[in-house]
Length: 169
Image 1 (cartoon, rainbow, N blue to C red):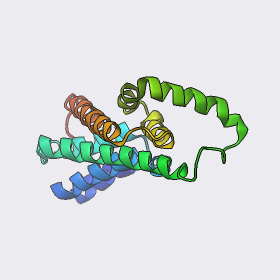
Image 2 (cartoon, rainbow, N blue to C red):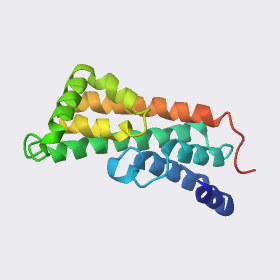
Image 3 (cartoon, one colour):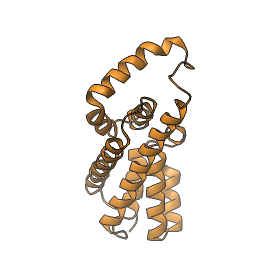
Image 4 (cartoon, rainbow, N blue to C red):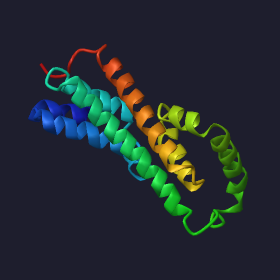
């Protein structure tokens, strides 16, 4: 996290650049293939929010986080759908059969509440939408749930950021 803080302090980026950083980290932390190589999402986003605390309008920060997170979940959902486009998940090793059956049952019984709650749990943030795509959950409820959970997550991050002083003065 120190390199990000130093970069922000050294270059004192324009508000638009900070919003882009916030959007990209929010997006990246919601996509399974990108999230694995990024530092922890909440800490990174909090640093970016704190860096622009007085320079950025709250609505713009909330929008950047929400749009990035929702788009990331939707991309993970479609990645899961692409993985299973050729038919059932017969291409996976047999050892995954039992966990996949459990996941399918959980998502079929509590799909949207589980998808909403997964936004707030690090690894679940991208694996549950991926699994929802693999299980072909309905598109519209997945999109809506992803958007609502992203909005709530953004609000929670921004609320926590307001408890801390700004990084830049």
